[in-house]
Image (cartoon, rainbow, N blue to C red; front, side, top):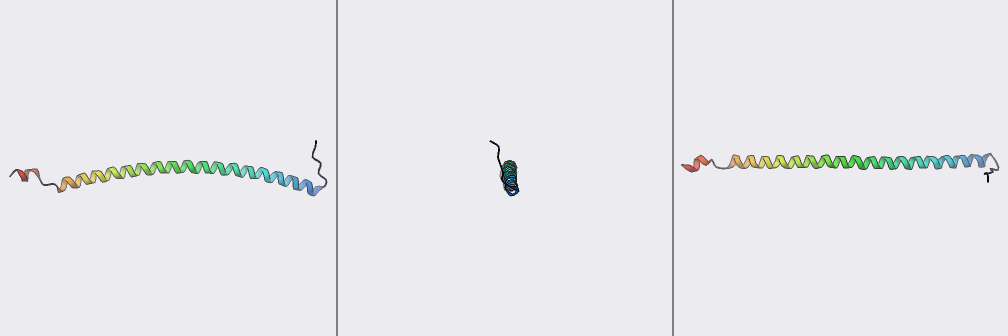
Length: 80
């Protein structure tokens, strides 16, 4: 059964509501895409942070080894 609109105002309201509904769906789709992109970007940054923290821990360990070696007594001094 075809839709019968009584006057111009009804026709305008129908078109406006329909266009608003379509626009709302488009905005919802865009929001979902942006949220997915944000989750991906966040996961990449978390990976990068984990790598940097690992490198920092390795550098601190190496520095501690160097400091321990530098502060250790000389083996030749204990032989005499």
